[in-house]
Length: 114
Length: 112
Image 1 (cartoon, helix red, strand yellow):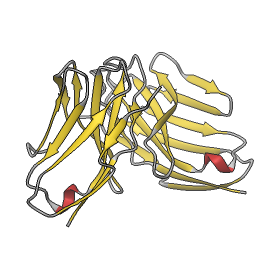
Image 2 (image 1 turned 180 degrees about the vertical axis):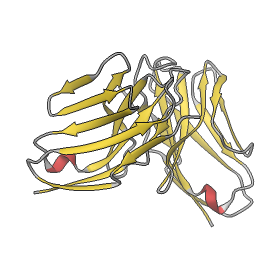
Image 3 (image 1 turned 90 degrees about the vertical axis):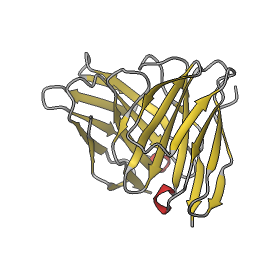
């Protein structure tokens, strides 16, 4: 069974640009959540989607947005990039919402903002 | 919101020794506490979890303990092996969806 797939794996952008990251969850998983990982802050929750609806949102500015499609694939977008947005963005899928099942993480998309 | 603190940030042990990582949380509504292991270049992977109605859980060389009164939980790895070297994260959840609050991680090095 294929795991969580994130694309692209690496990307470099400049300040002010925007970026879109993609996540394909494990087949059958309907919940997709996104986390930002930085060396100093650890993993911080961005948002979670279930059945194309955003269920929870973390404490990030409105420049960070996401969506989920009918096939459960998800995208997140960051507009007007800042240097501080450089991070590893992790997507995780789960069979259901709530802690009835574990999170399965992808390998992440590493974003560098110059 | 919830705040999870994790200590130590780095830990080196000799192969065969035990390793202990400790976490505290602030929100008494948190009721689910997973531990994730992240190897270099990989995403975190669940290794063990515990729910608030249980005080201890063990899976082979790995065990987790939870003290709800003190709001802290710990990961214990016995008979460490070089392949245990990784970054370990604790997390807490209130069960409202899949929103988890993670600690800042512990980089464990097992010296052969």
